[in-house]
Structure formats: C-alpha cells, structure tokens
Image (cartoon, rainbow, N blue to C red; front, side, top):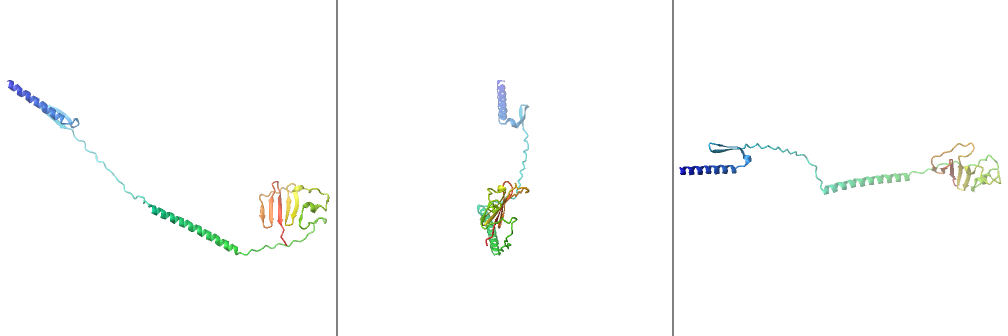
Amino acid sequence: MNYSRILLGLAATGLVLTARAEVKSMTSGELTDTYIKDSTIIVTPAPKKPEKKRVVTYTIGPGEPVKTEAEEQSELNTALTVDQQQFKDSSEAAAQVIRELAFIPYTQPELAALSERPLPHPDLVIPDGAFTFQQVLSPLNPDMAQLPYGDQLNLQSNGQQLTITIGNNLPGVDNIIIPERIQGGMIDLVPRDSGGFDLTLTMPQQ
C-alpha cells in the first residue's frame, strides 16, 4: 500500500516537473491556449502573421553632365576670345570711319564781303579796332557819363570780336528768353540770367 502511494507520488511529481519544463521552454508570445486534458498539458502555438511585402520603386533618369575643370576653362577662353575679337572689329571699324572723314574735302563757306552803310545819324561813326558804345555815342553827347540804358543795351569790340548786349528792360522790347547757349562758327549767343542775351560775333580777318 505504501509502495503504491510512493510510486503515485513520484509519478505526479515527474508530471509536474515535466509540465513546468515544457512551459518554461516556450515564450508567452508563442502560447495562445494552455489547458490540461486527461492529465496531459496541451499547448497550441500562436499563428504567425503574414509578413508584409515591401515594394521599392526606383526611377532612373538622365543626369546632368558633369563638366571638368578643363572643360570650364576651355569655355571661358572661348568666350574671352569672342569678346576680344568683337572689340577689335569695332575699333577697326571706328578707325576706318575716321580715316574716311579725314579725306573728305572741307569747303569754306563763302561770306558776303562787308560793306559800309551809313548810320541813321551822320555823326555816328563806328571806329576801326577796339571801341566802346560810349565812344560811339560821344558825338551826340560829349559829356555822357553813362550809357542811356545801362547794361541793358551795349555795343563794344576788342578789335577781333564784336559783342552786342540786349536786355529785357528796354522800352518797347518784349521779354527775351533764350533757354541755352548757342555757339558755332563765328557766332556765340549767351543767355543772360535776367533775360536777354550777349551776342558775340567774331570778325573775319582780312
């Protein structure tokens, strides 16, 4: 009787140890259901999830060509050569125009010969060489200390140029506004700040 109990106890102990050994050798993620049926421990493994397939797409396109340092230097040299040639061509064209203009004959304009005309007053005489307006008017008034209209009306010459001054404050003369200086040949017309002008005529030399 005692022998039978001992065998039964040993068998139960071995079963328990075997059951514990089976449980310890598996992870909790692998177990879905554990139960004892007819003194047997039954363990079913967890179903594995199907692995998702990852699709990788590669797009292959033409890449930009990589220029070497030698190619870049060659392009720079070509551009500089073109610029230098254009500058040279422009300079040669300008020089050719200057050469052609140098051979164009210059024609001196024909000027009418100066002729003496009587002044309105027989006592008024325009002297030769340099003179002032006061000297011209002195036969009319030898004691003249100043011009009748001051700097608004004047006439003088240095022997080579004759300058006529007309201002804006003369009786019967409308305002004279000249926007800018006119200069060319024997004429030099200079506007005055207060209106009017100074006209200088270069007299031709005989």
